[in-house]
Image (cartoon, rainbow, N blue to C red; front, side, top):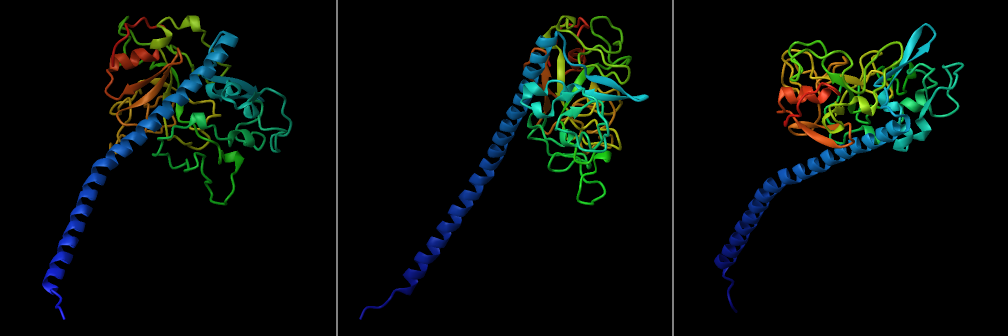
Length: 338
């Protein structure tokens, strides 16, 4: 009877185990090399999706502008009683974004504490009311950047304003449930700021020098295509300001709100004009003021929509003179490269 060579058997088992460990080590290295590439590819896809959102917004706004011969007002006010109710640029062309069910309505409103007869946005009813709850809680995918990950505490993962009091229901009177927007209208270059001079005239910019003007009372001025003398391809119309929520009754972070416009650059010291760092003590990515930094979760910049309907990725290293010039519609600045 033959004998079993146990030493040879053990050597073969040990060698097989070493091979397995080598294979696992190689796989770990490959995964380590491939994972960043996969993540980068996914972010590139999300950034492209965001850019396409802006193209669709631009196309809808151009349909609106061609029909009416002017761009929508950045902020339009309607008198309600002794005050004003404002609506944003983002509510005027919903028909062109396949959102007809929530399109703007100027019909008379009776009791705003009851449900509206349909889901339209009624300008003659308070924004935070039961009457407008169906409209304001409707999510518009085109208004949301897929890269948006850092969110204001008032904004939930479902891209709606959170249930503040935790009673498992949305209270329309406090803005709970309102759907967010990751894009802000550009009202122009920051006016009356000596740090941001017009490179053509050497003077500070006047008020209302952009396209989507932020006029809080007494109606809102609209801008015609002919008034954009700097050129449609050189003037910024909409920029990314992702992740915003609300503060009290200030609803700048929702698409239906009437205060969703900013001037550029931000008129504040110590805060970057694009993508302020979350580690900075001056970080304020989601301010409730009308003078905020453009912000995104894309690497190294933000997407922007120009008045000709094209999009541009604006680097956070763009020169200040070029960035300021993009905000005004008729400053006469020489177009500058980032």
